Each structure stands twice: as structure tokens, then as C-alpha cells.
Length: 173
Image (cartoon, rainbow, N blue to C red):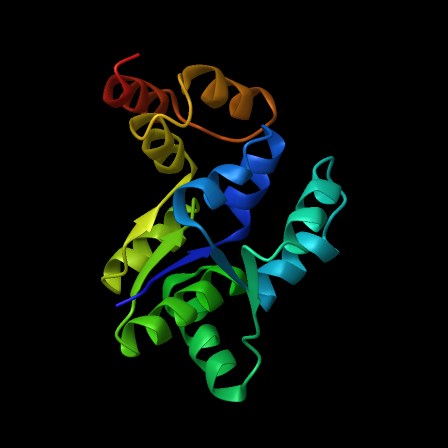
């Protein structure tokens, strides 16, 4: 049984923003991104980290998966409407459900609360940017998460004080 890691746009952008996008490669080996998420990130790239993301999308560990069949789009649209999530999150969930149907384990890397709730409702494991940082800390890939969490916040990424406090407690910081 293979493990398929599927990332949504939010964690990709946030990790690029603090210079830690390679943590995904370090932790998971390879990461899948739906073509919809890739287009969202690359074509909407009017943010400072767009060039970093563009370079990473050209690397072999970042696998772009086409999700354009009528069946896949219908399923994604259904999830979008049901859970009030965007098409990127819905397409990531469709890919995770397809992986699971093939007998693989799927892990979604997603930050949006509605998307995370929809994934949990579908019994799909999900981890966010903060969870990625905690995992990297536990595995010894980074020494402290506090400066990274504060860096995310300083760069306009919303993190509640409760989330930061909880993460710091889990990290022993």
C-alpha cells in the first residue's frame, strides 16, 4: 500500500513564503498536486513567492496530476457545493478519494478550515502547515517552530494565537 500525499495551494504558498517548501520533500518524498491547484498557484502568481513555487513545480518530487475528466470535475463540483469549498480543495479531495479507492493511503495537506472539515467528513486524513512544521520538528528536520510560525504570521498568513500556543506546547517550546 502506497502513501499518496496531496497538497492544496495554501500550505504550498505558506511554506514557500518562509523558505521551507522543501520540508514537504524531506518529510514525504513526493507530493501530488492536482492540475487545478497547480494552475491556481502558478497562474494566480502575483505574489512574492511565485517564482519559488514555479521552480518547485518543475522538480520531479512535485507531481502534477491532471483532474480534468468530466467525472472528476462533476465530483469536485459536487464537493464544492456541498461543503462550500474552492475547486482546488475539492479536486484534492477527489484525488485522495481515488487513491483510497485504489488501496493507497492518502494524506491531504490543507489549511482552509472548510476544506479540512470536508476532508474529515469524508474520513480523509489531513494535515496543515502547522502540522507539517510540528512533524518536521519531531523528526529533527528543524530545531524550532516558533520563528517559523511567527514568520508566517508576519507575512500575512492567518494563524490564531490559540493555534500558535497549541503548536508551541506540542513542540515543547
